[in-house]
Image 1 (cartoon, rainbow, N blue to C red):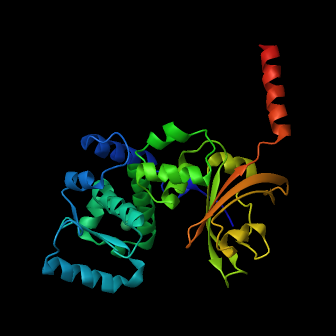
Image 2 (cartoon, protein in one colour; image 1 turned 90 degrees about the vertical axis):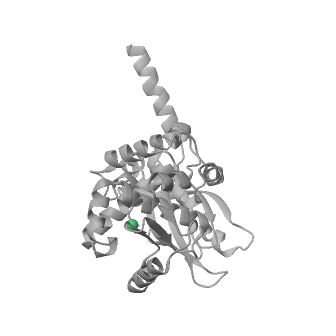
Image 3 (tube, helix red, strand yellow; image 1 turned 135 degrees about the vertical axis):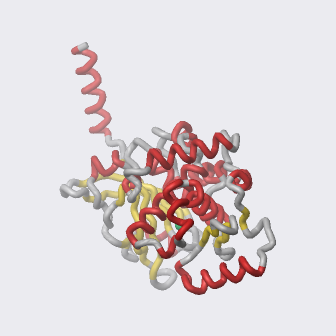
Length: 302
Ligand SMILES: [Zn+2]
């Protein structure tokens, strides 16, 4: 499984601008501590979401035609004309909140807004749509975690997945969105691996679907540390095979791109739907000694 660097998902060029737009929006709404009240953002953009308004038959017709055309691919939409956001009501509530922030992004980011006045998101060129989607997701993350708010609080601190659950509650976000943002703001080496169970209960394996890592992680360990799945006899699969077990801490040895063995701590939660695994390297004695040595050398030189 190749790690995707979290900061490099198609948003390299626009990251600074996205942050600027989120900051401007939060400031205009007078929001300076979590959780971000979505209602206030919607008001600010003169948008409504379907939960707050009765949908007129005209809008409903447009929406249902849209959903029909898009099949199951679509989870949320922004109608710039009707000033309406609609998201799939069958999704988990915190996923719905994330999607509403995502749709707000399409309305706030000037280059999205301009493009979407003339065409629906789904009629854009695939490459443009991929970029727009990544940008809107990034915007949503920054809006929910209030740009540097989470970084100031947690950068440099190695969090466990149970602690991330507390952070998620603080920001009113899903655990998955929180874990992604944690990788984005973290400067000590950290990676997140997302998987899904496959097979029969009791002998399930975990098929890995997505991996995010920060630059510090990629610099030290390259972009490949796990294979594409954990086979059913792998100790980590206990989390999807033991009904009473939803959390699992493990230390394991993996091989980096150069074939060197690395000790990592994995911290896994199974949500009943997917597995989220935080990966941090173990601070080995050797490395700490090396650091002490180099500090001493510097001190002596100084
Ligand atoms: Zn979108």
